[in-house]
Amino acid sequence: MDKGLKKIKEVEDMLLNVGTLLMSSGASTGRVRTTVNRIADALGYNIELLITNRSLMLKVIDEETDRFIASLKRTSPHGVNFRVVSGISRMSWKVVEENWNVGQINAEIDRLVALPHYPRFIILSSVALAGSSFCALFGGKGVELVVAFVATFFGLFVRQVSLKKRFNPYVSIFFAAFAASLLSGLSVKLGIGGSPDLAFATSVLFLVPGVPLINSFTDMIDGNILNGITRGIHGLIIAFAIALGLLCAKFLFNI
Image (cartoon, rainbow, N blue to C red; front, top):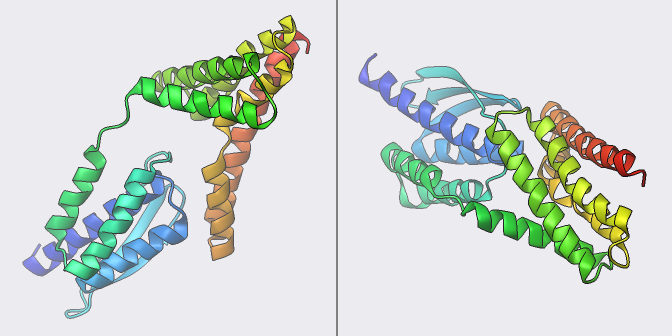
């Protein structure tokens, strides 16, 4: 491969890396397309980009020589990492304003990927506090807030463990919903607190697929119909897994 094609290949690999990172971190299809196009334009290349839910197909064209390279890269399973999404977005503007080269871009991507996660206990406690806050918003008090906190904490812990054991993501969500509703359902069965049903209803809200459903809507509005439908179905399956976990707990306690 000569130097010209090698340079195009370096740009292509970098752009595919940016696109797949954004997709797997919870960015909408429109955001991925805009960001990748912005970086390519700043580097002086034309691109043709096809984005599906699990892969990206990219063709990079050198404007001066009219030579091109086309490749496909598979997207890793989708999650939510707004730190990566916002970091890449800021980086794309620096590429435009400060004329970054491919080496600088790759270094920044490596830095973003290597950023440490919050400690596990902090994540569990923060999400549990959010679950308790939801319960308070719906009118829960005192004991109900404690039950919601504990149930949410335990549910998220079960989800983390099941994912670590490489269970199917939807099965992991079912396990988490069942575990959380099992604890909160016990308070309903025993009549702990003034309104234990509030803790039962809010203990699984941490599993609600907000990002997939929002991305589904924005993708449909932007004309990315296939990705919008795929993400919408993904969100519905998650909602079904949550409902199934709640249903199993209700049948178990006959509530």
